[in-house]
Length: 338
Image (cartoon, rainbow, N blue to C red; front, side, top):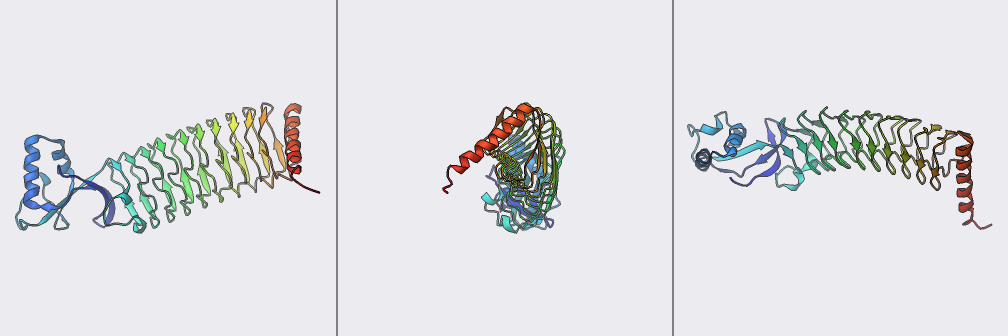
């Protein structure tokens, strides 16, 4: 069968992600159909379901028995297959530049969206992801700066790293309950997200997952989450309400650093380790309830939290916290000359 490319084509006024066979004469197309019938190839079944353009126009004929009535024998035919995996449209010579796409409809046959499939589609405003999709690849929609709304199908189980990175107009995200991990940088730099729901199915939040989501004002990390990675929510500067539920065992380095609007914080008993600079630059933080199980508090965990004076917790945990803060101040003063 002739080689195909993945492309974004205009079909009935909509941008559709497809696999495309090279153009051929109608006589050659009929010969291809005949050969495929003889071979009994699965390609024959694919062709029967494909979009067929004759002279650039969609034909209403049965693709498997296409006739030449009223059509020039030299007319060019192109076959467009909807695809199971939507791959990177910017890697192919489709004649459609990713940055000018505004509306994309992904075919119902697609099961996955590949790595960087729509990266840098900077004009994309409307996106429909069908229920057939279960996997979204790394950087699939990164830098889609005009995308404002996102609804992920209920059957999505995997979202790749940086999948929606720097979608700076995205305001609301609902993550389906079939997702178990949010990988590194999945929503990093999505500065306009105000509404975020993390389902109870999620157990892992990777590094930089929501870093720079500076319009986010409240956050509940569900009890299912056992790991919060480095910089996971760093620079969420408008975050005023943070609930960490009773399942996390560790909080990564810089995980909530720069959350400068946060005023109070309770670290649950399940947490045993708080990373380096985990809450550094939380300049509005005034009160802290700390886990008695927290036996490891990283260097500068509360650096530049100048208003933090109210500690609550077991005597041992408060003592450890105070020792950590005092030690950090002492280390900082060594580099200051009087």
